[in-house]
Length: 124
Image (cartoon, rainbow, N blue to C red; front, side, top):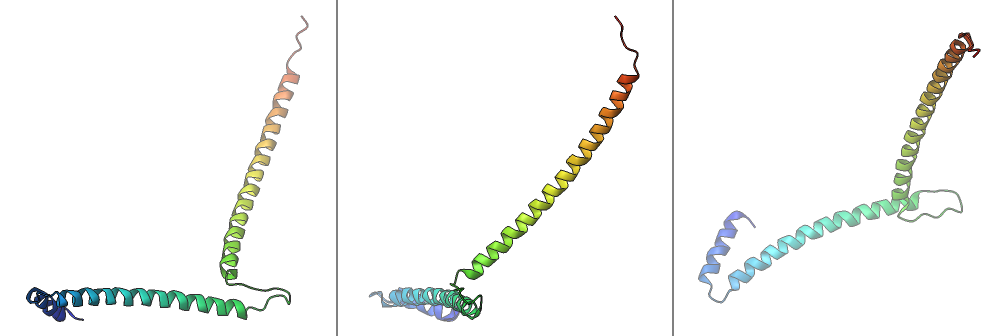
């Protein structure tokens, strides 16, 4: 109902001592809320049905049976695989940095040992 009908209903409520107009307003508002909720639920059910159709149409191995959770599980597996790849890359980069530091440190140790070897020995 439009804005104009709202004002008419409100005026009727003031003139209606039995409360019928007030009840009509309450029922109209409740009806609008229920229709909105029904629209939301229809969308959810439609989305679920479409997902189920896709899952059931997915032909895997001959012994593989799918349920409606498969798309969510595949999405989660993809997320976890991406995380593993990121972590593996970070581990590889850290290992390379560690190896460079070890090499540079070994180089410094060798130079220090050469310098110590070149020092005169203390014969005391």
